[in-house]
Structure formats: C-alpha cells, structure tokens
Image (cartoon, rainbow, N blue to C red; front, side):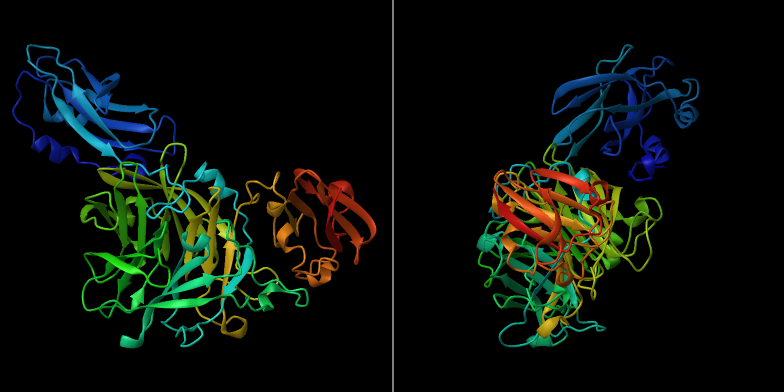
Length: 580
C-alpha cells in the first residue's frame, strides 16, 4: 500500500499486531510522513488513531521542530482499523496535507485524549532532511543551489556546444568503442577557477590501469561560468571536425584502488569527488577523494556496498551540515543511502540510512541510469536528482539521449518522484559528440546556472581527442544585460526555437568566420529564430548576404524573435557585433 505509488509505508496488519491491549489513552500508528513535491499542499501525514473510551473520531495534533503546527480529525474511512477493533467503527484514519517548507525538521503526531486517560500519546515522528542552500562559489564541500530546479531543467537547450580534450602527453587512455573499457562519468570541479574536470572509466590493464583522469581545460574561462566551445575555427566548417585547443588535455591519472578496474558515474561537491568502483577483490564501493589539488588528489574514505556492483555515486551536503552519499548498484536499480556521522567531509564516518529499489516508483518511471547527480533548490532546500541514460523510459525511443529529473524526499525513508524528462541531442550537423549512456554529469556554475556535461565512450575525436558537449539554459549568462563579455545571440534552425543552431558569444566573435554562415556549421540561409541578450551600447547586425552585405536587421537588448515574423526567416548569411 503506497501513497502515489512511491512512498514506503508500514503495513496496517503489522502495525496492529504490535499494539498493546486497549487502555484509557488513545492508541494508533503514523503510517507515513513525507514531503510530496508533486502537489501543494506538500507535507503529507497519514495514519490512524482511536480512543478506547469512545467510538467517535478524535483529533491529532501536528508539531514541527517542537512547535505546534495544526490539528486534524481522524475521521477518514479505515475498515482495517474497524475490523481489528470491533465496536469502534471505521472512521479513525487521518490523511493530512499541509504546506510546510521542505527542510531539516522533525514532524511529530500526537493523539488527543478525550476520556479518562492521563496523556496525549505520541504516535510517531519523522525527520526530513533538506539540501544545503548556503554554499558559496569555490567551497570545498558543497555545490551551489539552483533557482527553481524544475523550470531550469525544462528550459535547458537540447543542443549544446561541442567541447573536447586531448590525450595525455605520455601514455594512453586505453578506451575504445566498442569495448568494455570506456568513459563512465564526468564532473567539473571548482578548483583552478573551475577549469578542471574529472573523468572516470573502466581500465583492465591491472597495475598499469587508471580509474579516472584529471583534465585541465586551460584555454577556458576563469570565471566559473560555462566553458563555451573549445573547438571553433575560422577555417573549419563544423566544430565536430575541429581539434580541441592544445591547452585542454588530460593532466593526470588516478591509479586503480586495490585493483578495482571499473570506475562509474560519480558526483563532485566542490572539490570532493565520490567515485564508485567495482570489478575488484570485494564488494562494490565508493571512494571519496579531495581534488583541491586536481592533479594530486587525496583519498579520504571508503564506503562499501552490499553487493559486488557499484555503478553510480551521488553526494550532497545537507542543511544541517551532514552529507548524504548514495551508491547505485547494477543499473541503479538498487540505491544504498549513507548518512555521514559528522560535518567534516575530510574526516567523517558513514552509517546506513536506507535502501531504495526501483520497484518503489511506477513501472516505466525509472531506468538504467549511468549517472545520478543531486541538485538542491535555492528556495527551500528541496533535493532533486538528475539521471542520464540512453532511452526515454516512457517518454522517448530506446536509443535516444535523455536526462530525467526526480524530486527526492529524505524523511526516515527515501522516496523518488519523476517530475521532468528531456530529450537531448549529441550531434548538430556532424558526427555524434557524446553518449548519455557513457559519461555524464551535472554542474552548477558560480551564477547558479545548471550545466550538463556528457562525453563519448572512447577517444575517437580529431587527433585522438575525447569528444564531449556542454549543455546550458536557453538564456545561459546571468549578467548578459550588463556585461558585454556575457552577451550572446543564439541562432536556431527552426522558427519555434528548436532543432540545431549555433550560439554567437561575444568573446567568440573572432573564433568563427561569421562573415559567411556557410562556414558556420552550414547554417547559411537556415536560421529561423533567435534568442539574444545584449547590453546597452552594443548591437548585433544580421545580414542577408555574406560578407556583411544586403538587407539587414539589428538586435538590441534582450528578447526572442521568430525571424519569419519580421520577414527575415532563412535569410541570414553573416552577422557582426557593433557598438553604438
């Protein structure tokens, strides 16, 4: 018996069997207390109570963190209670929904005595854990929160910017496709001004193998914002055919730990990385590393799982300063949750919190996720998880690239609810640049923008490089209306702001041949809509002909335009940034 098919409950039969004989004080059970973010009111309390001195329904009082919240009458139809206690009737259940901010708080339910009893007994309590919203950019052990996670996720651009990184100066990645040795996870760190990545993999070379690589994106921004493409060229049409800049390369390798050959999908908080490992001498495990010195990470602690599988690891800081760690077994069908015993991530121990099974959500609402990353909502600390995989569950084809968003409730037991799904594309006009069934990972930049990084399975990019894509929001730069270096024009192939396109960032105005859109991913006379954000004193002029000729239109300020509405659809052949 489950609420909305996803909450864990104590069965009525077991609860009734455990009750003492009737006395004068009320009796009862709290079946569940949980935050259900799919609806408002969002706090759900359900159970039953009766007073042995009356067949009438009695009241329950709800307290949060020791303070009175509200009262409710236990008059919901519960024939199971009536059958267990003949003569008292069936109207003794309570099912309360109220609005209460998601956060670290203990919710308790008391039954209110109406007869000769001497107390209002406590029926039960549960504590809900929320995410930490006070993180600042560059912190060691936390990630920034995201404003309105659901809306932000839904407004991510489904086509991204092509990126890549070069192989190490010496040695090899030992990855290939098809092969069992391939990339598994990718995370961006805040160290080094946000210019480092950690990429995990499987490597069967034994003592010579590596479970992950540290990647230095030396050509990229030091602002902690989106990388933008490092594969732009004025002489090569498609970024897919362009080699990454030489400053972007694998700078260090992380050797196998105790012979575990398979690193999985991971999560970083600040510079702390939770890296799952399997295919070793014992059960699967998650190893925590401090990557504050990105090329010389320090091993912190190890949490062992209950099976030989450890395909994913998720990690987040909670509002009370503790941490929640998740180990995903095979295909993430079973998730083992561990709560830290302390608030210092460098020294804390871990204890089991709950074990969750994919059968606890409706059929078709969960998949074989390769990566699962926590995200925290700024408004209330609500925790979410983003999962990446090949296949759309109930929302798309089995061979397409998808991310799914779930709300997560931690209230003694764990509950998931699917809240959003998005189909992403790993190619624009050329070859595939990523694979959602391989390495994926979420990142929150210094402006609280959500970014998603996804790599391919091997190293078959130009010059032996590793191909990847950075996905971002449809309005990706927070200060674009004031800072010219964050200004952009985003070109779309279709008139409804969909399909492939190209973003024209101000800092990249000399990185492509914008005088001829035929050499910009073949977009000449194909642009049908634009989104733009341009600060005062600047403008972008769109031209009908190459080399800045023919009829033109100008973009200023911030907006979204269907170019067919201004008789300029499928006509752009060149563009340039100008100052007033």
